Length: 337
Image (cartoon, rainbow, N blue to C red; front, side, top):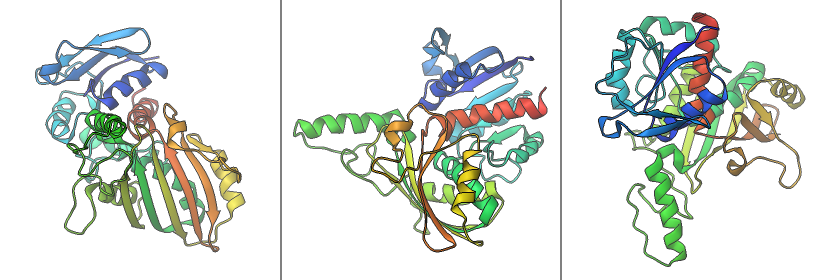
């Protein structure tokens, strides 16, 4: 099997570290691997798999000429600057930030949902990885759309602090300790206290009253499914470290046959159906940390053309790092052999 030179941009971050772990776990065909971060992190050591370590190199001075695939997850401004530079040098870039997602000539890919759209990478040699909440919702609703054609989506997300990075996780951790010590709490990263609380805002507000996170879900889902489905999203930050959950209500054009839908879902790689109609017969964020699949529970109808479901996934894996690696695997399988 052919092997590839791979570079990770943002290797010291939550997602970058997870990408390194997943590349090792899935035995990705790597010839040489390079871990990149800002110059202030140069020389730091990051783990690669269970028994390997890599020294961080400076992104600012790195030459991409010998790199085949770049997996980038270091923020939009970094991607804006370095993804085109890497692509110009001959690498194919899989970018996990929001910068390229809605660009017309950049494919936005979830391998289980729209693999055929990957062919568009040839134009710019850049592929966008969707938002974490978009990914798990799109994987879950794809079979519903295939069978019954979705007309409208109303989704409420319950997103863990890891989606906002280590600084957000630290704020939850230390605020939780301070609650038990009866210390006053002063939010610094979040707009409100996060410990034992819910915050109905993720990212900044736009003029239309939506937040940027909500607009990402709306626009990205429409682009991935190739349909102007009506979508209403409310994104909520919750005091959980890892794992995003979503309550999704759908209106369809055709009558929903639950038996047919469940049969189809059980056959789809990447979906785990856990829907026992008993106490505890569903999946929660706590149970999906470290898991690759999107978990679906609480499937039920309300009328012939309305359906609700509960969707949970590890936002650092399927919501970010794993999907990026799966895109790279699909790229190799279809175009780089």
